[in-house]
Length: 120
Length: 112
Image (tube, rainbow over all chains, first blue to last red; front, side, top):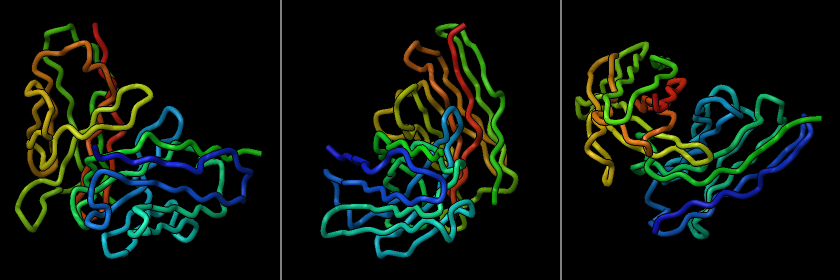
């Protein structure tokens, strides 16, 4: 069964950094683009970043220059380095599998999410 | 960025009745490569991640009950639940995926 499992969330002070990871299993990870989608408490969904099968990266305006997405196909792992965190970054962060190798950010598999709370 | 606007924000429907959710995009979401609309619908139940229901505006994802259907083209789209069941209580999101990705604000569906 295909599965995504996020880790690394937690409580962090404003200006701090956090690294999220997503472990993939049950499908050929290297053949698909992956994304991070976040959801602030009680709010809607916001796509924040994506990476193609070959490593091309994409960012939403709200995180560009602060967050870095990467992948390790040898370990079936997606990573997300989050820097200069602010209160607006407080959210559940979902790892999501795209339906193709890249260019079509439609998500057919989601992890359970990891909560990031930015507060002093 | 393409802005997606859903209506209504919430609706209450009796069991067995039809539920209709609308989604409007700020510009056309026609995908050049296949002339289809890059419009998807997701269902999110409390405490769960979203689940893909519909893609290319009208194609049902494998395993999704046929009471869920999608329609529309260009900038105006609709998700219809033909006969609401108790397990359909959720928030529904539309999403455009033409290159980048943006979601509507969500529509909460409840039982009347």
